[in-house]
Image (cartoon, rainbow, N blue to C red; front, side, top):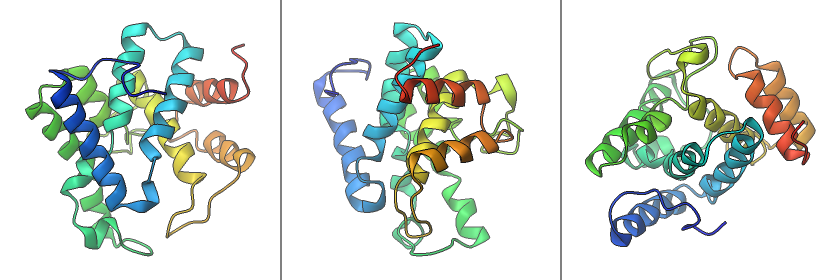
Length: 198
């Protein structure tokens, strides 16, 4: 997918290019997430298509997915690049990245809905997510889509703390975590992955 397929980032090309460059810098810094944002964007847009999201919603989702981890620029290397399990304190710092990202993008005049999708992509269906403990339909639909796409890519990619799962295992994990994910979104992901919309 070409980066200008959805032309939704604010301002002129210079600002858009700067944002894309910032995301690329984060991904180079954290090699375990190299190309993560591109894959997440592709999965999320496919889900949105199955769910019948409007063109405007897909445009917002595109920019939000591509920029969803931009807040990691504010996390120290000792935590972000740590090999092995994070301590409770370190995990609490990692959990700040959606808020950091929202604040960065507020300064760059992204639309409130775009920022909201980023802020809430780690909320959980049961209300035990972060940063605001939203639950069920109080979580923006686009954030719920991003959460499924983000998690699928994370568990199918090798990381220092885990070995990647193959597709069927990853789908089983998404299905079993009905306290974390909106299962309607999981079903839409499965249909999109299998190339069916019904």
